[in-house]
Structure formats: structure tokens, C-alpha cells
Length: 411
Image (cartoon, rainbow, N blue to C red):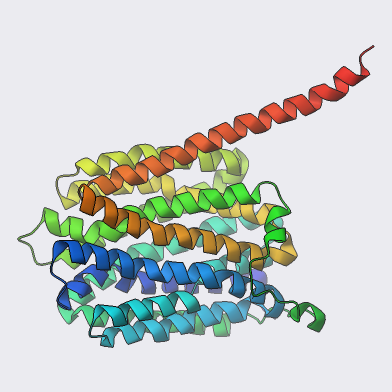
């Protein structure tokens, strides 16, 4: 019988690898589409947004199903399904010959994967309450480390071995992650047969509405993911515009995205450690505000180096937002319904990830590639303003509730 720390370390390593695997092939998709003959700028932007969004859309549809099944049948088997399923589907992308085939496999990928939600709910379930903020923060660090390594690996592999090799590399890395979970994590206890019989195939909205904070937290999740996905989807084409004479667009894009993800990893580790003392809500507010302010100047970057420096600065704040957000969700969630709650949260964040590339491609086509940073900053800024207004309204309601008994008891 493995201790929770042993299981946690196995999940941490496996999820870091899984995210690195997905990030190995994702940044090369626009360049892969170019190799297929999509050379018209407008068509390339359209297909890039479409292919990168469809996986998030299907993930949004299927995540509540997998979350409900995790509560009923066990969380470990859901994590294994997402890793091994992703390994097979992404590997098949190396053999496509037209954009529609890539689109179909990306849609199937969203149906089968969702490693972040599966790992998060498993960590939340095995970690003692006093350590949950730190554990989720360190998990987010692992996710960010994977996000930083993946684009670098993918860029080098695609530049020197060809675009299809990046998808094969993803399959190998995801398989390795799955085997780590298979041998490093004990099978969690399954629910009793009557409970399993009630496994939900639709979102359990009652579980979300059980806490007044959960719906608001999920809206913040949506905004955060959408804002980060808007510029990321267009990054390879923006880099290509900055250095049209250079041939290593994939590697340069990997450097930009990888450096930002590395900054996110550092922030998640540091902020996740101290956010409990400062307050998860306050930490989340400060991280989103800082991210909004520092995303906007990226529109003025003149070369990839400037863009990298600016992206690192913004991701130092945005990287700290997710562990605080996940900790708030875990604390406010019924422990027996965490799978369903995190599953629905994954649906909502996936919709944000799906809309991000669509918004990014639309803004890039209508204005310019640089305008995507303005759009991302605007969403973050609006979220900060909404959180501030909601906090003031909550404080006002609390004051009125406290004043009412005093007024009624006055002579």
C-alpha cells in the first residue's frame, strides 16, 4: 500500500510528462497545416483556429461524463484513460494527409483526454486538507514545467525531423506518463454498487450550486483560460511575421512559449506555497490584475527576444492564478463530488480554451497579430473588475445582514 506522498509524486511526474507531451505537438499545428498546402494567410488563420479549438470543444462536452465516472468508478482509471487514449490519438496525427483528418483526430483527442482535470481531482482527493494549497500549487508547477519543455522539444523535433515526428514524440511521452501512474499509484476505492449505478452522463449542476462561490470561480476559470489561449494559438504565425527570413520558426516559437511556461512554473511553486497565508481569493485577484497589466505591452514587441521577456513577466503573475483558483474550488467542493465538480470546471475552461483560438484568429484577421494581446488583456481586466465589484457587493450584503439584527433589537 503506497502512501499518499508516493502516489502524489507519481502523479506529479506523470502529469508533467503528459503536459510536455501535448505541448510537443500543439505549437507546430499551424506549420503542419502549411505543409499540407494551406498557404493563403486568411485560410491558414481559419484552419489554425478551427483545428486548435475543436479539441477543447469536445473536451468540454465529455469532461462532465468522465468526472462523474471518476466519482463512481475511481479516479486512477480516468487518469490512465486520458493518458493512454491521448497517446494513441495524437500519434495517429502524424499520418494525416489533409486538414479535415487532423480536425477529426483533434476532436477525438478532446473526447478521450483531459489529464489536468483527472490529475487535479486525484490530488485533491488524496492530499490532507492542510497541504492542499501547496500540493495543487506544485502540481501546477509540474504542468507549467511540462508546458515549457514541450514546445522546445516539439520545435527542435519538427525543425530537424519533420512535423509528423512531433506527434509521434507526443505519443511516446504520454505512454511513459501512463505507465508511471499504472505502477506508481494504487487503485483508489470504488464506490459501492448502488452509487456506481447512478453515475452521471450529464453535468451535476446541484454539486456546483451547493456552494455560492463555485459558479463564480468557474467563470474566472473560463476567463483565465480564454485570455491565455488567445495569443498562444497565433504565436507561431506572429513569430514567423517577425523573422520571415529565418527557417527555425518552430524552435523560436518553442523558446517564446517555453520561457513563459517556465516562468509560470516558478510562480506556481512560489505562490502556491504562500497563497494560503495571504488568502487564496486575494492571491487570485492580484495575479489576474498583474497578468492583465503585463499582457498588454506584448503587442509592442519588435522581435522574439522582446516578446519572450514580456511574456515571462506576464506569466509570473498568471502562473500563480491557477493553483489559487484550484485550491478555492477544492475547498468549496463536496469531497464526494469533486470528480463531477472538477469535470464541469474542465468543461467551462475548455470552452474558454476553444474560444480563445477562435477569438485570436478573428482578431488577427480583422486587425493584426499584435491585437491578440490587447484582446487577452481586456478579458483579464474585465475579470478583475468583475471580481472587485462582486467582492464589494458581498461585503455590502454582509454588513446589511449584520446590521439587521442590531436594528431589530434596538428599543
